[in-house]
Length: 434
Image (cartoon, rainbow, N blue to C red; front, top):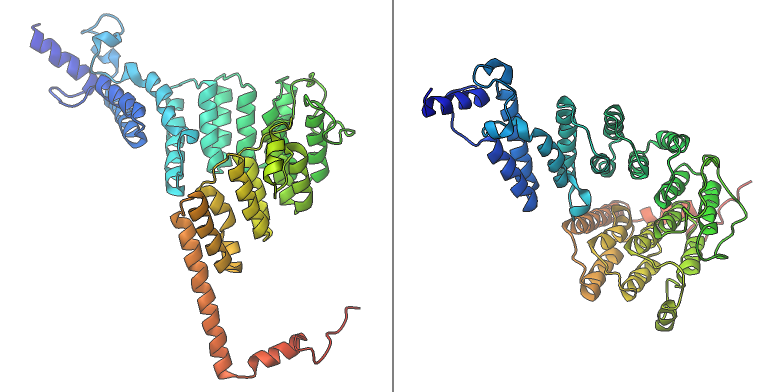
């Protein structure tokens, strides 16, 4: 067999057709890695799919035993996609890291979720064993998309393939259940975690506080927060008489593991805001950070000597979101000012928490003024979504004004009659409730 015949035989082995030209498996694998390094998710995923397609069109090695006496090695098969499949499965997940993506839109997120679902199918078909970090990446994608069913499938696949789940995997799964609204399943995961003797972390406790808040169990959330304060390095900052909750069994020694971290603190702020306890929310913020929402320069200087928590962007966003939700716009703007004074830069998301369809419909002019204020004083870029919200609310307001004018022109006494019926004219007092 001459050299040309041998090359044609090898190409036939891997492509199924003689003389077919195109990229080899090694070429596609290298292109995929190059796109990953260049932060090109679409290009990386395209080459990954091409590699999978090449694998499915290749003929089995057993059909060509006459060419190689033993199973071909990767160096003997430069055109094949098979030697690179498992490495491709491991590396392609780098393009699905949500934390490395800023400002992703809903269509973009749906595309990532579609890729993640396809990845799970392909990995299962190849009996690819996921690493613990791979499980977290997939669960995070489906958590952001609020797809609880897909998160359950990932967890089942990881369990069936023998992945030994650690505390980070359990935390990621609990978060996915929370984001999808599967609160019953989240409680089951917490129980399973404790039964298997996995030592919880501070993030586990933070998610449990949020879980209690979402299910309306405010007292249990407060008790769990007090438990975190009890194990904090600084004592006397909160009431700690209540210990333990319904879902925590003393099977492992948690003392020294827990502590009041900023994540736990932020979740408790969110629970209070969700229940409309704005005064308690502000008091809690001041007690643990040494700052009030209207802090002066002297308070900020004293904050440098404070031994409590240092608020981050999430802390301020919780305060801004709930004050804007309950239409305390002045306090929300004061928190933005405090945020900037503390060295935390306001971002477009900060404005989106204030200007929502609900707040804009209530007072579109106030929302527009706040958008201009954040842009001019803090350099916050006004996103297209905020512009659309303001424009839509302004159109609705103008339409309402036109309807009122039309009603007045048709019946000049319309508003007077309506005022008399509702008791607003002062001519007659409204009847009292029995």
